[in-house]
Length: 391
Image 1 (cartoon, rainbow, N blue to C red):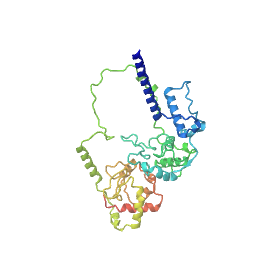
Image 2 (cartoon, rainbow, N blue to C red):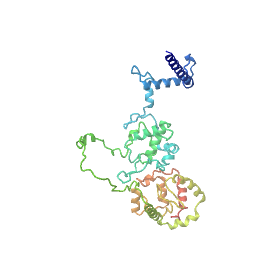
Image 3 (spheres, rainbow, N blue to C red):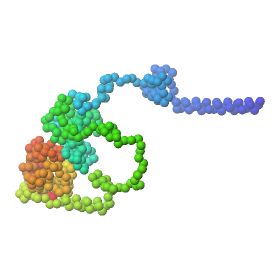
Image 4 (cartoon, helix red, strand yellow):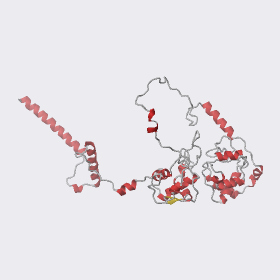
């Protein structure tokens, strides 16, 4: 009997100890509920609601309903519903042209996509690439590849500019899209793109896509029985990814390719003797203005000592050189045709090209719309002359 009392006493002390520890833990780590609900702060109230929501999510509702939130109103749904259909359904009221779009594009888009939508570093090109989809290395841009203009409008409005999405007004979006279209030679610079004229624009590759009907057209190829006989015993690499340039190469191969490329780029040009003699008499003021105007060209063209081909060919010794005449550079078809005709860059042809590149060489990959001021054309030509003796 005595042993039973001792055992009972010890058990009671253990239980009391556990309760004491639990009470101390609760005091330290569990938020106390206030006796008067009116004294609850906004922060605590939010915490309680979050705790209740978490508990409800974990345990599930007793009646099948969480009773959290409310149904969205039509206005709230409309505020987030920005879908634009190919037929123009969903377009907001607004307008813009390429002239205004050039300024908006320069402010919000050029840092990634270049001043002329030519792309910067790994950021994509938005213009050019016409007639390249059948090439080994196609250039897929808004002009060459995208079949519907609604996709362009939707993407710019919903996702651009990078890091500040949905900050553009509807008019700014129309203007940017108009500038992209103009850069692809699809519209004129004074064309006003709006919700009313949207369907007047037909994308060049609108018929380049087909309906995926393989579910019906190729159903006869399918069967539930999987063939596991006559399989190959091993897998081998049989081709090199030459176009994508991803197949590893040894250092000797790379050195030879760089050496060969250097020889092609440094091939001497045919220099106009008259212009060469005039280099020493260049107008200093025009040179200064030309250097400033040439900044619009620097994103694609290098000039001066050590200049190399980039998106566009280098411009050293340009006058007297055959149009499309640098070996190894991938020119558009129109420049290749000009070269075959024996046409040469001179002041007259350069002035016409700088004023309206797409009109002078229709089909050019160059997305620059041209200088709007005659003085910029004159000063740029003078600036180009100052590098006439360089190859």
